[in-house]
Amino acid sequence: MSSKKLFAVSLAFAIAAPLAVDGAHAAGFVCAYKEAPNAPKNMAPVTGLTADMTQVQARKRLAELVGDLAIAKMPPALIVDHLVWAYCPLVANDKTLTDAEKTARMRRFAATVAAMVYAPASEAELDILVDLPIAPAVLGQVDNAAKADGLSRDEWLRLAIEKALGAP
Image (cartoon, rainbow, N blue to C red; front, top):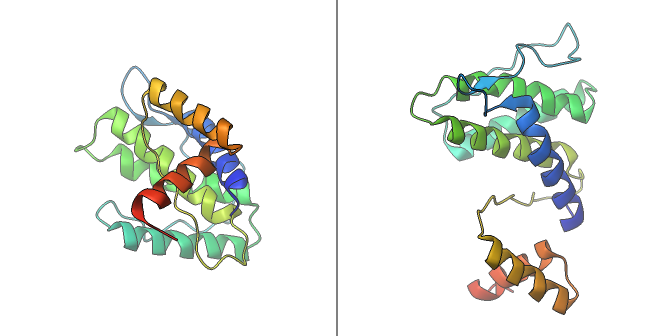
């Protein structure tokens, strides 16, 4: 996935996830709806996503679910909605997480699903989205450096990381 597409998908879901998951609700974290909006009425329930899965297991199961829903001709936006809706109760019921952590987990989940759903079928490997807090002053320096090099922020950061790691 190109960095522009990846950034657009990330931005869209960074904005959309808080709307789907009201983490700032005064009574605590709640899932915004009980059923995925506009989901087909004959949609099979999502199974196989559990709170105790490893990252690798969850990503594999998620890829299977995305594939199944795509084969069933569900539109990409509805796939994202449906999977976010199905995953939200698992996060909401996790007593080990704070409300802020639950909201962050839902945002990462939505971004991961979106990256899977909107990735071109020809890509052998999906880019991984990294959610990293950066102080505004540092981000300003990154933006200035990227602009000086004629690059986007994402491209500059990717190249800086590759250079620091000695990657080709």
